[in-house]
Image (cartoon, rainbow, N blue to C red; front, side, top):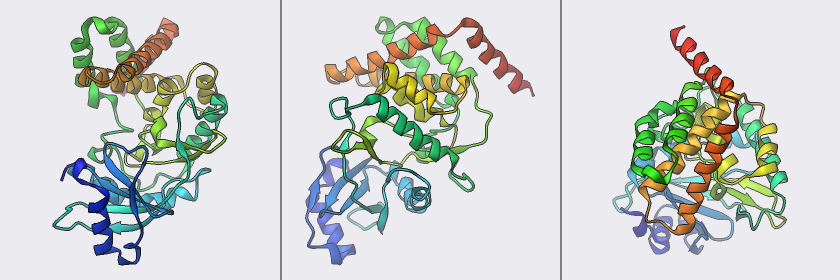
Length: 314
């Protein structure tokens, strides 16, 4: 079943079949929906989340298993599973019902104080990284290797640089990517969100960070993939406030630039017919990442690469 087929009427029938106690509640679209899953509102206090393709099914059991454990250790609300829907002949994937979280998707228009927002987000992630990772799911297909080695996307990144040609500064992009690849993670794994984008952050009426949603890419591993929002949403003083709020070394930030660069490159290359606004956004992310890399002393970049080679020999 395709995402377009997961309509409110269809989901209402699933609810009636498996959860008749909620059959009289309306099922309505949400203002901002994701790609991996279809999310709809169930009454006033619940939401329904259904995988939009078979490749996202593993996320259901993972969220059901781990979100309750994570929630008690975090300073902001996250999705709370209330029930798990079972596959049926009509919809052959598991699915979830969650408690509804109030808030609007973060945007520059809605966030009144971007620096305060950055500090709050850094505090949330710092708390996430302190949670005991024992038994947590390691990077894999369930989260598209978020928290894993950037080498997973090496060929994809280099192909995108070549395909984009003069649209990007190829030598600078390659140098930034190679530095990121060299800055290998040798720390203990930590819990990661895996998809820290503005679309997964909710703000209240005052523009303060109110909740963090969509843990489909969660797992344990390298936290660098969570830091891309430094270039995709934050800027100037807010970017520095975010960085200061997280006690992470320069190698982690180098890898984070690699994650941000990879995503912006493939989005620009694969979806070149997207809206001019989206294209401009991806180009700006690339520009920001390359500029930050260029400001780093060459000796520090070389040191990251040398350290990586010595680590690989040990």
